[in-house]
Image 1 (cartoon, rainbow, N blue to C red):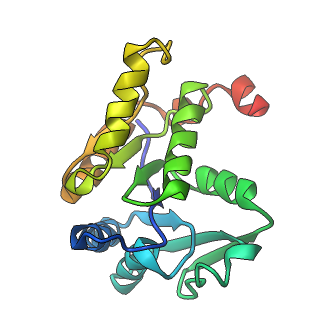
Image 2: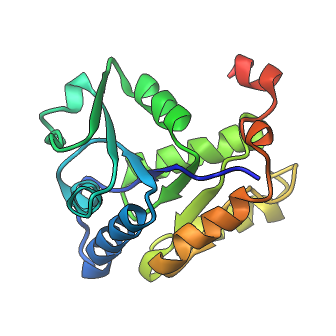
Length: 200
């Protein structure tokens, strides 16, 4: 079985219009800290990004922020992170976030959040890794995306069957769901097939 030591969280640099999104980000940050699971994220201090990072930090958890140089001002660098990694571009940021995390969670967010979680699903489908990927469907936020995935499947565009994602509607279910999924694969299996990883 593999162990989850750090979770990469993708989420918005805005708070959104539903207060349940902020509450979920704050609660998940508290849960991560209480369980000694580190947070890997985009290092912003605004929106849901800032909310979850502050919650982890304020409750004694580990925060690792990874951000490209050009976003330091725009996303207001979270200076209280235990570790801050400045990258040259978005590609390096996403690669390092992938390497530093044992699982991935998509909280509500915009196009960037959507792109990041879909990229992880693509990498998993191509055999790069078997790290758990969870869509936190807070207040039904991701319902349209889940319908889209079913649409792709029904029309034959997911040739290997369903995408390897988990769904949790309740924030308290996220970490237990990830832990249960990680227990089904070894540390070696989690990293994917080496020959495919090298090509990506």
